[in-house]
Length: 371
Image (cartoon, rainbow, N blue to C red):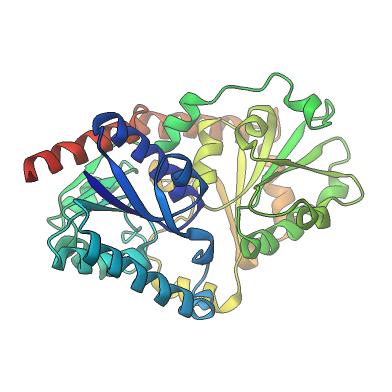
């Protein structure tokens, strides 16, 4: 069968690639085209446009990339019209994908959404678009199914692909030696993968270096940004950068400072006590405050339904506040044990690995019924 897949950012590219790999195990004649990156390309999809051209963070950045977004939308519509895939699989990236879902539906193409936009957090007007234009949602957070079903949408909790990635992870025995790290306790810093989010958080985090002479700060870098870019943050050798080794880093970390996002959940699943931080430009922040409907920004707290990890957001994200919160989760302090107990609750709610294979099986079976 012919598949069209759209993943608009790095984690979506990874999860979509794992899903397509599972689909290919079931469908020996599978072929795919779409928007993605190196992960989907390596999984066998023909990438028509790289997601990096479209990656957006914040409301104001949309205007800076309008021409590229229009180009991508035109490309996708031409592909869907001319090549008539059996289905389109949308992965996150709601601002772009919801419009494409409506167009695909109008052509009679089966529309599946894996990791749908977080409409439960903000812009719930999108719920109606999902109900109208998507044949089935495959959700990856435990509370999402009940939310969508309450609006009459066919949704299934398939587990979380992060569980698959962690289950498959093999610890590198020489991680410390290979990265020239010593035996000092590690404070892991996970600042995200986009320059805009990195620069809003990392300078503030590293300003607390003098307060931790007995620790080493290690930043999780990503390979889509150059080594010369990260060199700006090395602080005369006090800060180390490791690339594409986040799980190894978390396996060795005593504590972590994590920019809000999927990384907060990954850190919890590795049972590393963390402080969640977030900052963006003022306009984006003020607009977000008007629209966001949830009490927390970290997935850990959202899944737990209560505060498990501290969240330092925008004006509350100061070096002094960060030191206070890190002190609470230092080994031997009660805040650390309380957080680890909260992690256990989250892990229990998450269920078992297998999100990619479960989703692939359901998509394959639904397409077989169509035929």
